[in-house]
Image (cartoon, rainbow over all chains, first blue to last red; front, side):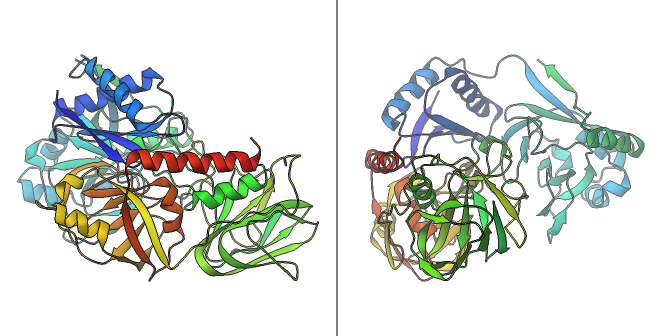
Length: 240
Length: 307
């Protein structure tokens, strides 16, 4: 397995694996993050897992870069390559009905698919969370069906509503908080994927998968009410 | 308790930042000038990371509702306790009903007001820091304004009224150490020599997220785009315009532009205090040199706070 250490002054070391976006390489990032979390190396402040690298922030008053690199090399050397057998899937309800899907017509027109076909493809399979970034809980997902790819809006919206589910080029994702953005909006989730006051503020982690499923607006309202009361937890499943 | 009479330009409760959340795409926040934040806390024998008020350009006017030890650090601001001018980097005792007025900055950009025991606000995701973009942390997730009231924690018994140190002086020509990497290999030696040799100017595009510089453009040999990776406080990004952007306390967690270098932590306060028009030169340092400087700074604070 290829990797190199890249310095970020006295703040962090980035472990860079092969520079490529793939399930396999991202699996190394997730595996190293898991090994590090279990290793209790003193002085590690936090980790930023991304597509093909893991940035390790450290406290240089506790551990020096040289020693940290030695420990990282040792851990990487002993790492089980590839993802462990099972993957965690976070099942997220999405209402694709017209009140929540202002750009569904654009997507249908561009892809030549009917609304039902768009929904069927968008909910067809779990998608890998390569990393979280851009906004709290914004997941960069891999593996959307290519038939759904639709260019972004020509002029971005100034505010996209919280929970919006959209397509931008060959990517899809959820806006965890209201934000400007140019994605084509095809639905909305009633789930709060980000809640700063919850014990786990973000529902999912890099390396897990998200699978969307379609709900009616009545179910959307019912789930919204449970979310408001703090009584909703999304279904987590595992797959080989 | 401290009650805000006027909130100033941008007054925020900050501590050393929100840690362990960048994996979720969540920015660290925290004080921009951590040296000044820690200096204020060290003088008051607080925990070095206790919450303080960070102010920019023009500070707060506030009412001490009880006897309180306090100090102000950072840039040179006009500060009065009632009608008397007071100094930065010095421990004072305010009596009940004293009014502190922190006016405009004479040099530097930011100052920090700390009180004995620190300001008490509820922690969000483990930190008191204000994150304005998401509207969480600090005081109701926003900047301070009139009638806000801030509770203070338990004061240390070791505070010495009148204790004073010489703090750093900010402004003008700034020299900062930076370590090449993580993507310095995307730039030719000529481009790297330009970065570490030429002078850059701070533009008016500066905020808690980053500082845009004007100066010689830098070109990555095969374009500046990378597969998005992690960003830290001090990363120097080179976008396709070639003009460096230094990422500061509220930086995004990941980014898709090559980073030519990272500013060493000991020199980040100089950038936090930089104003539009200030000149910056980058000096090449090694990771080991950066670690030595960070250790010296920590030792200074530990001695000053008597820990």
